Image (cartoon, rainbow, N blue to C red; front, side):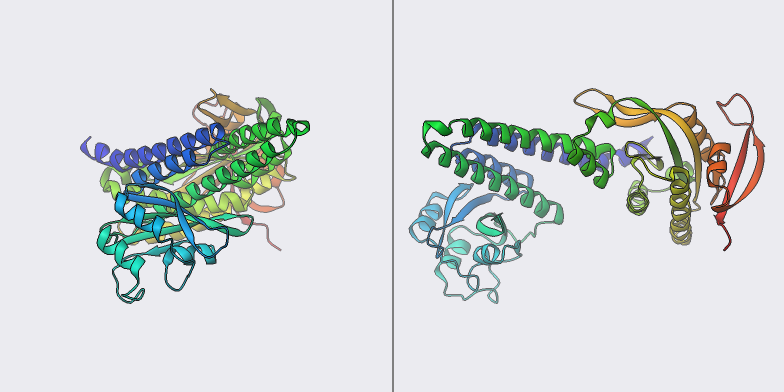
Length: 435
């Protein structure tokens, strides 16, 4: 029981961090939608969240001057008043050779300075650098450009007063925040342009409000779709605007179930960190194959994977696609299990595939939903997976009939499967058909 508690700790922390980031993004989107005439509230909430979530006591958003020669502070969080006054009175030149922030904006790339006090980075006599390190105590800094229509208009800067580089997740989060800041800036520019027009163009104001609301709704919609659809399929559904495809309906589908043999025993003997590392590698490798072989929907729970073919978008050969995916998964797992065996872990992998009609669609509430399937076809695939030995791919009779001739297959005979009333004729895939 103690080990199970330890195992949950990093997952709980990761889930907490993800919830905090999702909450921050929702808050930013809310402020964007209510601050069309002024980007400053958006900048403030972005910097506060960036500072808190990235553990950076100082944050600022700077913009390039109209003449393109300098950059000035548009908003800040956590900086000393005297340092803010100094930068406003002495706006730095947009010189990428002297300043990391300028380099981020000129080159439109993220710049990460691990230690600003390193004498090899910039000339020791530079006044801005001296004030940054002495007056404010800045050591580690991160600059993410604000890119609008292919050109930089400013950047977000985060600073730590100790040498502590930012990790990849923190950098990615700030890059997301930078995109939100650009949306806010662009929205404000458009709103101000609308206000300058005559009363005959008031309708454009409503169009802007609708556009902002649509952007927020689209982001949330895409986020929900990506929970249960592969990224390419989610994009296809969004672009087609066919949410009706996701409503509950009957469909002729191929269902693939797969999981790791011996995983429960492994979890009982392994350290929590080993379990997490193994699952990370497993799902990373399997996820790539699921995308490559066109699984329309995949669900993953622990070591278990369920993939649906031929729904919500159709494919010509659902059973064949499922078998080809299964063969690729088994080959990959053979390689992974060989490596894990050298570490003392005896693991295997089994797959079950069935073909038939099922009830599929999105179920749940507005706040929590998933795309799933139910019916005998799904139960049969799950039972075949449980029956499969290490390296085995088992087919239902209907799946076998659909791929016969495409693959080398051997009959396993009739097998009594749990939850299935009558014995089922089971077939094992040996590999591609001989040339």
